[in-house]
Image 1 (cartoon, rainbow, N blue to C red):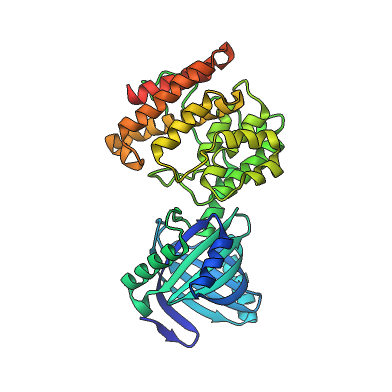
Image 2: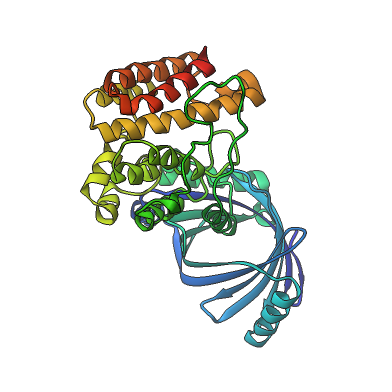
Length: 398
């Protein structure tokens, strides 16, 4: 039920957030299905430190102001939230901004350009968020008006109409994504606990310096920030661990290997084309042809193909790929194995439920890759990385 007192409202809504691969196609489809365009807005949300729930002051086009308090879980898919909203005039907003900043402290500010569409009872937001790479879609419906189940059903209908059902829903808010980016960028990734049974020349957390310690750290940190924005909101399978931790560790492995600087950059960027809305042209424009060639070489060309077909392609392709591409792939798969082993110690056989194929298929894939790496990485300078991969593979699969 909507409770209203003067300009104070209490409401319940349900929302869903998705990172888009082709926002222009989505907008064309919105027009085709008869969605109503409501306008463009520039929104600035200032979040405050709040012990319970979330508190923010929203400025819309620098003309309209709201104080909003709500509580919502970080879960993928549709999520419920109850919120209070208070309308303010510009003088009240200015006063409130100062008071809350002094009393609670500012947590983070989210600035976005928003296009608003309406379809039936659902608000459809197309958002460009400052500091986050890509374009986001947000579905929002007032549960008080149509009910929870009807809202979820309508969200599903819209997702089907827009043909974005294969996109992964984001569990985090924009504020949480930006906070996570700041945290990961400010800190080195903590070492994972070592296991005495894991014999490997490379430690579970590679014995490499922080990325900023590299001679060309400026370009490497540029690639890191690019990847962090591209993967914003994504998490590792079956966890709440930010996805960016994976390419970070891959780059740290590569820093200790006899590979080119381009390979280190590609290690940071290796999943951006395959798993985000980034296009290979963006990689080429920002980091050059050599880096783009490595990233393209280690990316699956057709994510819609069956799993077995995609993995067969990777195995066969690496037989003739550049050595830098082989090293990036080996470092990538090594980190996957180490991460899977740590998870296996915690959850056992339930680990394999996180993946599209069972343990047997995963073992076939990683053992097949091991044979390719042994065939390609024959020089002594590549042996530490090769042995680390093989040891991790044998430790996980036996």
